[in-house]
Image (cartoon, rainbow, N blue to C red; front, side, top):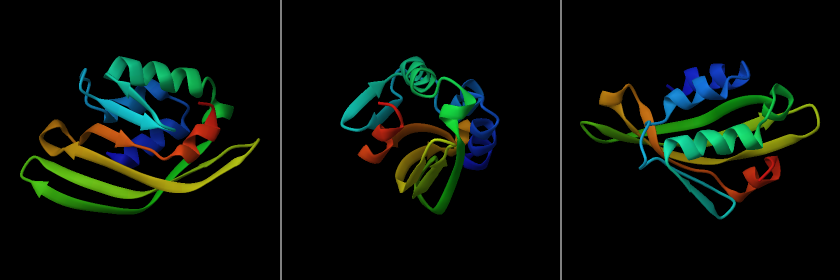
Length: 120
C-alpha cells in the first residue's frame, strides 16, 4: 500500500494517493499541531497544500517498520522525504495505522510539524 501511495504521489495524483486512506469520517490527519478529520477533508487539505506537481515534488518513504497489532490491524513507523525543485524537506517521522482486510487503507496518519513548511 505504501509503495502504491508513493507511485501515485510522484505521478501528481492526490486522489489516487488518497485511495490508501480509509474513506471514512473517522480518518484523521495531524500536521503542525492541526488535526483534519474525515477522508474528504484530508483530500481537500492535500489539494490545497499540494496544488500542482511542483508543490508535490518527489516522495520517498524509508526505514519503514510494520508491527502487526492484531489480525486486522498493524502499525507502521518510518520516515518520509519530500524533494521539490524549490526546497528539500528533510526526512521526518511518520506513523500510521492500517487495516489489512481493507487492503491496507490508512485510518490514522500523524505527521510532524516539519511538514508544516510544505505549505500549512
